[in-house]
Image (tube, rainbow, N blue to C red; front, side, top):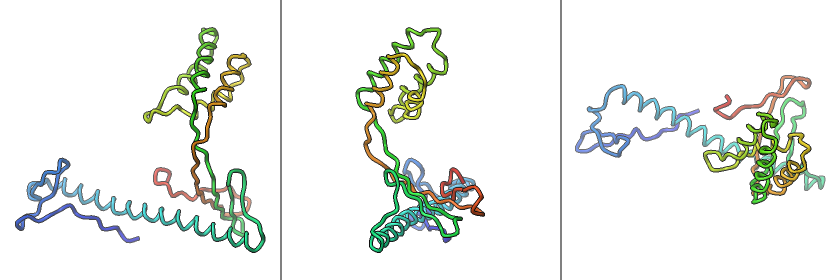
Length: 213
């Protein structure tokens, strides 16, 4: 893969090379420490590779949906059938069973005003149970209704509340309020590729996420 060329950050003024600093001020290259110049060169080299990889991933995603769309169009034309599953989830397999491509559609969930009613009912339960309330339940409740850095309710912890087996009628009403508060505000489609060494071997994800590589 060829390295993407990005500007070296230098510019000539009256024959003297300058580089801008983080404040936008021009500094003569001769006044910049060698280690800082080396760091700049290293970062630009890595960033060049990252930009090229990012462009490749974008092209991969575009081509993947085009290829799968073409395949399904052929199915629809020839056999009046399509690949599909619940909410558009689909799995495509190689003939030898060693490779598969999964298309998953995930709903984006938000919560309506009923969530505040649920919080009040849950607080009522915890206050009455007092010392009898398990610490883990209090912890889950606290995490669930604390907003994250983007000001969003912690959806994972909210869903954990729904899995708790508590028979108190107020708790049950609170859980129903949470369910009523859920609203689908959109969806996102994911493509995941897998491979395995033999038909009876475990599937392994083909990783294209740098953080998981």
